[in-house]
Image 1 (cartoon, rainbow, N blue to C red):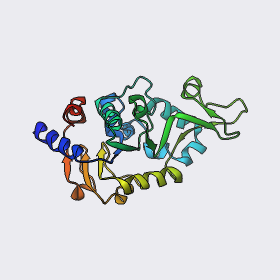
Image 2 (image 1 turned 120 degrees about the vertical axis):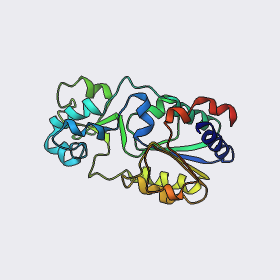
Image 3 (image 1 turned 90 degrees about the horizontal axis):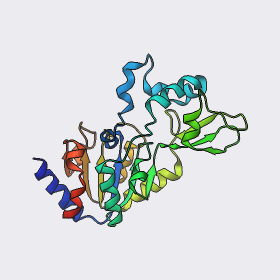
Image 4 (image 1 turned 60 degrees about the vertical axis):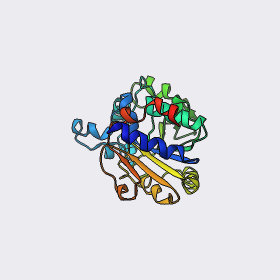
Length: 240
């Protein structure tokens, strides 16, 4: 079954010249980064509340306890799916990656045109003076990280209750409008406004690779439920 599915996927990629990829937490699970929702049982509050703007402002110390323990995975490396997308970009097939992930693994794999819808753990800024800080500044802080000016450092990630960056959204919409194939990987397409971006794609083939159903399955030309590590393997390049 996997072989047949991979053949269908290969043919769709072969016939496409402008592929946009949308990725979610599922693509990074094989790299050892779990979906943070799986940690909800460990906390009295839900991860969605802990990762909200309100919680960050009211309980900054508790926010960082969760964030540093559950959202940062320094040892994680790109897996075959990340690497395959980078290769497809080199070939001129993939024009843009729209990712909901904040782990930076697409960059680590070598992809260039990445639109980080929800920001990145690798960028952090001072709420007082605006100075940017590296991830290591967050890691080394015993509790709440502070800037030299005394201000609190905030991760440059989009928390719940915060809007997505308008410039990033505009670029995402433009890329989707130009695409002749949309490849959705590892996302349930339930979290808006990121998920709603699929609605801006209308000119080509839609492929969804996700372990569970999505609201857009009825629109898809190909749906793959098999594990990513069995489908998005580097050997696909040899057949494209």
